[in-house]
Image (tube, rainbow over all chains, first blue to last red):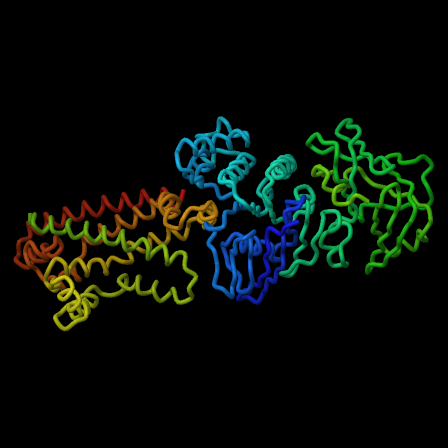
Length: 372
Length: 220
């Protein structure tokens, strides 16, 4: 495993905020890292420092054998010198140029034939044929996103930086494009760092997640690690998705999918894209508990479970359940007392189908990082 | 009509506009993009001719252009040119006096532009100058053109600074507006009226053009 990117720096703002980052990215199997955190946490600052659009006050940024920034040696390469691709949140397409001109804008090949060939490749790859002469304002949101990505990739950057790549789209489109974008990024082979404040986006697109809060990285690890095993309560609140497990869609009927998870089956709203392998994401507060075991097993997401752990978290109780897979429930303390919960007791966990989020799985990322 | 004066006026206005196009664009770009806290001082200097009486600017320029003034010494030793009461002199005065009419519309157009487009271009490996040429200029041209038209029109109507620095030398420093003043002094109301009407029609046409461009907006 070689380290691709080392960035260790401090950036101070006049208003008093300080960003203190120690971030590395390696060229092993996981090539997509999501910087996840609330707005104003410093994740965009990190991205812009990597791009060279702003410079830190102290520290070092090193990419492979090239020093991009070193405060003590007065090195600060411009964005033009860094061989990066940067996808802006609002795409920043040039309004006075056509689709073709936008995509070819940064391609510096020697001959115009080479350049045209490269642009044609991109039009093909991103399914933009027939739109060559359109201007950005004549494109839909999804088409704009594809043009912006094509423009960024046309010059074959060595590192790809994405700033909230899907947030400019409406909800329905966002869900469709999530899968497409994941496929493109996986095929690319280029290391990717993306910024997002959306859990589902991070889970869908990334192999690795760095949670940033209050100007520094709080936890970094695989998607499953970060979202299901937050290091502390503050991080748990930040990531806010207590259960993430891999599942397989075995049947879809009337928009409802039957998902096999471990030894259990769940009924969930089917995802828009046809996939088999999914991440099943469930928030703790969406898991209701009922005393005793339900007669028939797993009818309409009534799951027979055993209580594995009970943890007090302020006014809430975090209940660890085993129902064929690990499931976490968050209930209020009075509710827990009323149910007289004890570790080892049988109990019924109830889930509404819309509360189960199915996110298309990145090919093998969960099982690869967690063989156990 | 005093055709020599009208010809001289056109020459002065064209030269002023050209110089302010070349020198004003970088200055305006810097004003629009800079985050330097002392920027407002430069902005105030650029705006000064808007409120300063032309005679005041003319007086100071005349003094500094004289044989003992800084400008005078520089121009004589470097170019062998004397500035007071020459075309070169009124050109210097006109450029300075028109600074706000060029730089302010330019800067407004640059400031209204989406900065991310510039950053996007940089991240695509395109140099700062090329970015300016390929992205900033095409998107800001209505504002830039409006500034150039205002500058040209304002120079055509300039009177006080020209008279203070250039005096009233036929074919050298007598512009159309000075010529009108001269005709009135000589009680030749007919010539004055003709030249005045020409300037009125010209100014009105130009302002219509500038308004129309302004309605087309700044950056697309």
